[in-house]
Length: 154
Picture 1 (cartoon, helix red, strand yellow):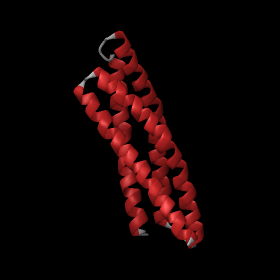
Picture 2 (cartoon, helix red, strand yellow):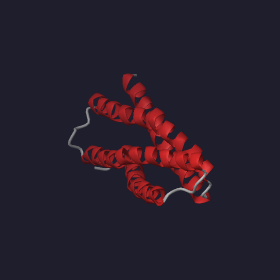
Picture 3 (cartoon, helix red, strand yellow):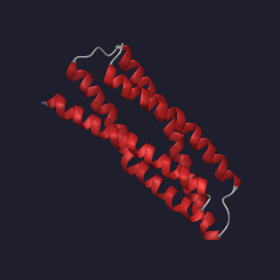
Picture 4 (spheres, helix red, strand yellow):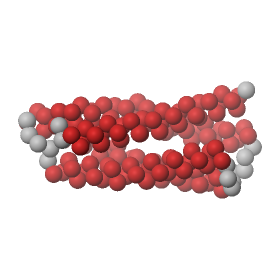
């Protein structure tokens, strides 16, 4: 029963982690495509909040429950699917950490543009491109991790 509860927490937190990432990316991307500074300011503020509430918490829950399940199930730590999952999770985290700072900066630049009734500065668009560039490998890493968790191929 303990394994089932931990697995449920692991799956639930992965759903929140991946879902928040996809949802944030979707709304941030389309708000930016609109070039509506007020919409961008609102969406970027909410994306930062969602990142702290959902992504930060589940980013901690995922490895905690994952490592505990490895222990409970008796999987060897050197299994290739586990090693690849950990490496890809670290890669996704390495992408996410600068994204957190970028999102905060994007939020602040958008709020400033709204306050001053100006367009977004070129720095905003450079940071947004970096935000997208970091999101792509993180997304791919999570998709592969999901496959590894289900298939356990190696």
